[in-house]
Image (cartoon, rainbow, N blue to C red; front, side, top):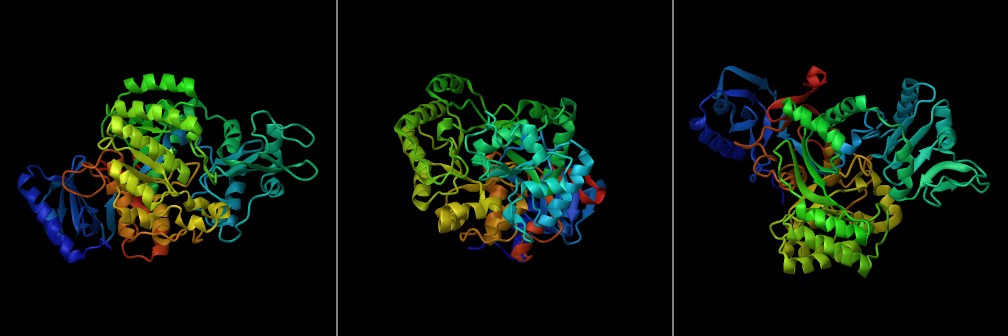
Length: 563
């Protein structure tokens, strides 16, 4: 059922909320945005005209007339000229900090729907890099997104595009395309054994033994290539991270649940926070996962000492995750899993320790059999250490079903949905056939009543653009327009899952996720109306302004990011 409420009714609620703050407001607002369509994403999905901000908080939402009364001589006023405003978008699972180590060097194909354009970008980057300079990316795209010519890159083609440069283009975690110079740099040659760090069989060769330039075999096969890419000099790390968050702000992201908070990049965010210029909120997902029984012994001891929630609304540690026992970490393109009793016993030992320590859990769980096996273990853990109030969350869950969701609800669990099909939909259909049309089953998730929210699992496994995810959720189409899922949701429910519900997944539901008095002023001003444009245009929405804590961090009219 749609949550859309008429503008007239929405204004009545917004005005009532604003009036409550008129009496409490002692000082004029610092900033007033008016003459717009404020999509508050509150519980009533209220629509208002204007919003007032003081410091880093929203103080009132309502009509132009009522909010105008909160302005003083020093108040900055922004005329929205009818534009829509939404809460800042939240991604509940993104490997953001890891990407800081490569972003400045990568040639990203996010949202690029033309192979011709991708080739132009490759040529331009090769020219900029100069002879011998690497041209590469580490995931975030798949060749099926190219509407004009959806075919893989070949070694010969890349040789022609960049004859003087080594090229490595990683498609999600599925495969990597290399040219001859890259093969030579890696020591991959006809008549010679494969380099020791490459997974056996991952280097594709033709009938004569000549390497084709394709490295294939899920995440384990792609990792040796990524590990061999040039390392970013330490003195460029902040510039690379700046470029990364500028792109995230431009895309509309204001808060991120970060899987793996790399210490070197986190230090940069901490410096920015101390300087009062944090461009995005970081909520870390981490912990001492184990890879074998001996590791479990060490991890259990560390879990007992783990402390979360020592930070604030800009940087904090909020979950144990995303792995618990790594042998049960489903490979991305595996078609089936077979968790063994011994492996599950170790997983349960870890989960028992996490529950005993009272820690929230955010765990990678993708395939049907893995999800069932994990729920078996969690039900056993729950009998000794109830988890109902710990926000235990299964992450990814592209193959989850209604029965599993019902088990999760009974346990008081939650669902972090990371739709890999946004770029990998065609690949998933090759592997799962028509079953891929329900991966993920968004309509089933929505109908279940479970708390769920969106993440991307970018920047390698998936793309990072939130409006592309929203387009996928509403239309069922991957980048490039191929219909890959049948279970879609309304645009209102999709937006709620990327804002208000995701605030719950970063433990900020009282401060983020909707435009309401008292909440932090994280807002987007959009170039078109999310609620009324044709569904196929949702992917084309661009923020013209992004605000974090009342501070403008991206302004398209001012040329981009601000300090």
